Image 1 (tube, rainbow, N blue to C red):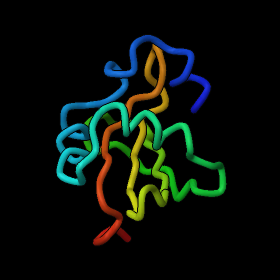
Image 2: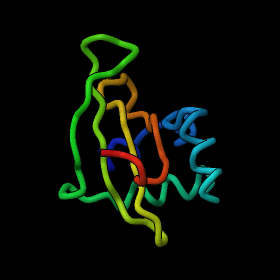
Image 3: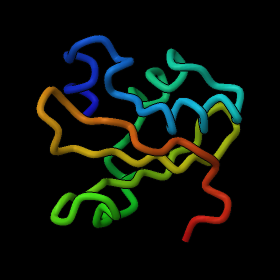
Length: 95
């Protein structure tokens, strides 16, 4: 996933408006999201969840500590052109 993001087209196409808004609430911008994603480790994978919007699609969830915050980061991996960051917010409140 990190390789796909690093090698893909401009990173902005990999982040939804929702994820950008969530990141902004944490004081992060698009460049910071990119740096955070490149730090993800395989052992931080939390679960795959079914998409609420597209039956049959699966989303991968990671729990990652970055700049003192525990983050919930959700990706859609099955997108032509590379993965898309769907959610990027505090882990608090997630199960």
